[in-house]
Length: 150
Length: 270
View (tube, rainbow over the protein chains, first blue to last red):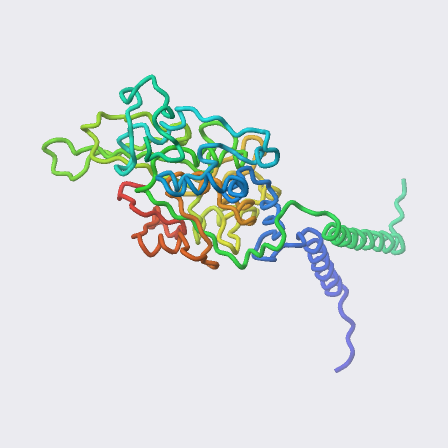
């Protein structure tokens, strides 16, 4: 077969195609984040970024380091499923500096769970706070860590 | 003015552009390498997302509607104040007695969630005698296996992680709000400060550190059960919960296959 020179319009088309493909690959290489496709069709480092947020609630474990005795007492009574931070609030500042006291509890916190409400399940002890020794503080009769004892 | 469009000039320009592109990409690679070595992030080290599968289940019988979880979620995740921004919230269902003489088994269903249940619930919307039954339903992201929000996102800013959480990449979110419309459970909102979509992350920053999500931590009645399906511990609460209860998911007819499970759910719950 005799040698035939490639027609110039075809050559231009081939060069253009190669140019477009090279540009596409370069743009893809530059614009795709390094961790893309690490776990799936998204930026893998986004997981670490979300995880780098600082926790606010310290967790029961941190409380047990100093207050193991109090936790033992609570574990024997009906409030055993209630964690420290449910009532005492965010404990992180207190853990970093024990002089910073946790939130002081008021009666409004007790009735948050124990106020009578038809939507509350039957197993939960409920009171109508306006009728049940109105005017007295809850802690005058009840001990929050040992709620069975009056 | 005359322009000098010669082959030499064109080639020079092309070489310059190519050189610039290569230098740019080389600089980027070098920056990433340096960052990996010198810049330490707050992210917990040694956490491998492929080795976990987190799950939350909810026990409606146990929920007392105290709203501690809603408050804790707002505090933990710095969720904006205001009654339209919640990553988790509590709904109260009131199912009324059927009208006397009607042949129906149950009457009208009322649902309310004043401020997401954060400040508790007023005694009742209807007189006690009219209530057939009433209960609380805690709501959060349902962690769908086929998430409509992930499919709707036009920029791939939201995704299913290998450890079973649906997350939003705030750096990639363009704030178009398609995912908010797509979620059939209403679990997403637009953060008014960052103008990006936000949702429950299962407290991803806590679970990667071995802590429980904030709502699970403060729930006083163990109505929220949380665990790792890939690493069951002794007496695993979530395994026990799955074995013991008949479980349902929300809106199963949509085919989203929510992974969050509810025990003790009535047919009115949507």
